[in-house]
Image 1 (cartoon, helix red, strand yellow):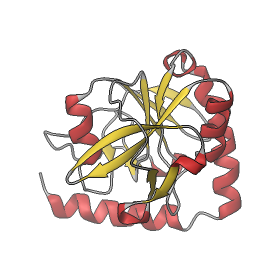
Image 2: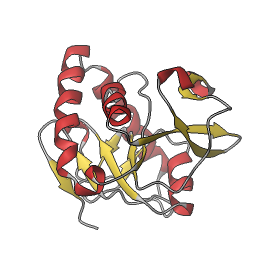
Image 3: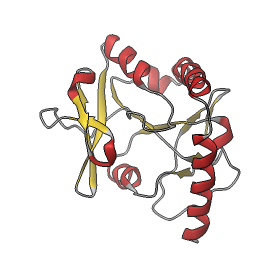
Length: 186
């Protein structure tokens, strides 16, 4: 796999996403919050892995709030060494700034990696479910060991026909954009 090609694509897509206005991101995030409920694996899930957004990632704060209000168990990733684990949060006060300046669960939050569904950030997606992340490989490593339903929230403009797939890339099950919800062609 040509890593330079992947890197160039990542930079291009990040730049594209970073140029999205706050208002547009907010509107898109609200649309996705409604659309994701069409996925029964999400609707019926009790234990849900989420992420706390950085930079121009899709906003998940309202989604997290809503899930907690609905009595669902919400788990956020915490990076420990070169591994990632999910920890249960009660609310946003369970979070603190961790590595990469990302909000993550505090040490007293219980870890549990057997989740019903995980919502994953992405820099880019292909319709067939190949995800372009930030290149750290945390999610791929985690998902290789913990099988679960995966959903990516992404802007329509971050979907590209072809993303070169590396052997360790985990194929994502569902993609939610501001316009549609679809299952990848696994």
